[in-house]
Image 1 (cartoon, rainbow, N blue to C red):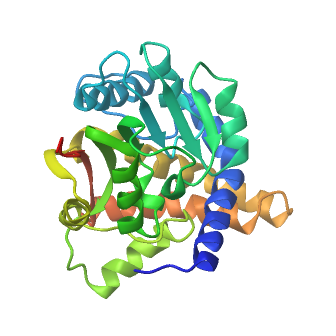
Image 2 (cartoon, rainbow, N blue to C red):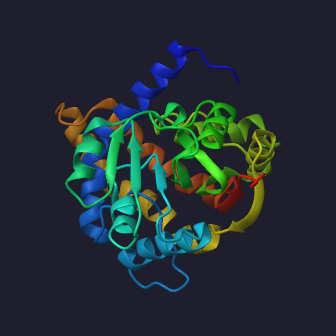
Length: 283
């Protein structure tokens, strides 16, 4: 879908507002989970949230096949947890991009990676400067995925890899009622849509990328994905009291209800969690 500059600016405003208003929630979750990472973890070999969060980074890093000297771009880096973890062990540049100024500031305090406050669909970086583009639960916020994929093609060197872990619609033919259920989650989370994984792969291939790996991680990521909903369900009554006292905003309450809707729609089988690796051909 073609988006105007006005549409994009409105969407950026919604994304910034979501992360600013939910910062308290992610900070509390960070204390509970032992990590400031804002994404899901993988539980097949983990017994704690912290171990599960580290395992998803380890899994994506292995899939990326990052070698010494290569440049990794974390596109949609949040507060920089993954980028700083990678920078601590990688002999090469690691760059994070976020459109939320507060996240960039916080990320810079957290480690060795370099962070820029910028749109990942219009990155202030030169052509063919990256070997890996890392997108851990960030492509879901992109309102114009063809434009984003074209930008990723510009940034990647020949042979470069795009690594994605994110949520995708379970199938392309969801009913209007099922789409309405998803919108109860997507709208307050500033996610414009949820495409099926096959549709995203088709768009990526149309942009010139080649699929080399596709793993359904829904079962392994499930405990983390459901944890948010359970947390919101438990804390919503207190949040509603604070809202009545004007100590919680409408957006904060909507975001918590969105967490509950995310778990409900996952349990209903309306979406899945996939790892994708796509490669820019060497020639």
